[in-house]
Amino acid sequence: MSKWLLLKFWVTLPMICLGHVTFTNLNCSSHDLDFMSFPTCRIKAVNRTHKYISIYAKINQLPIVEVRVSFCVIKIKPFFFDLSYDGCHFLKNQKNIFVKTLYKTFQRSSNMNHTCPYNHDIIVDKLFTGNLEEEYGRFIVIPNGDYAIYTEWIVSKVARASVKIYLNILNK
Image (cartoon, rainbow, N blue to C red; front, side, top):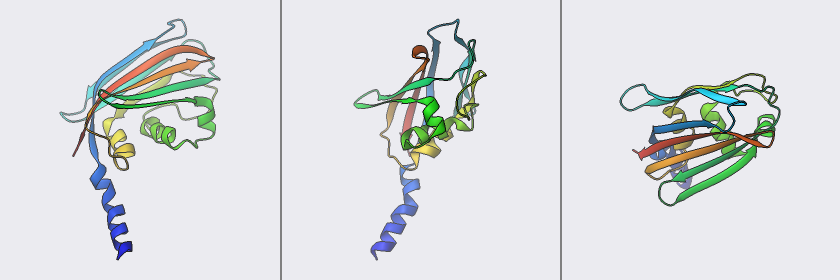
């Protein structure tokens, strides 16, 4: 009997934890315009309930052979998660499960799909809120509320850019 209960729980888990994510604001800024700029940084509505993000980072000094990414998730009330990792090392060896799940949310919408060096601009095109729901919402119950995702992009040990994504999560 316990096997059946476990099986039923495992089968219904994706339906229990699924929430709805809505992008509410986006901010892309370059710390050094000689190094890079953001010609595109926007949220666009697909319909009344779904939006997507498009980011185009124009890199003026190529190639990029060393990248460190600092990633922070903040709930406007009492929730905080902070992580930094070596982007080039991660792309060679995708073992960090949290970073891998994050990467999978934008991998299909981006040209960041190979290891360093990068000899081209970085593009995230139409990152759909459904990608976040698909990767995170099935396995983790995230409390309702407003969240901010702050990223800091460090190239060759110099802070070059930050991207801040604001979103709202509403569990169904």
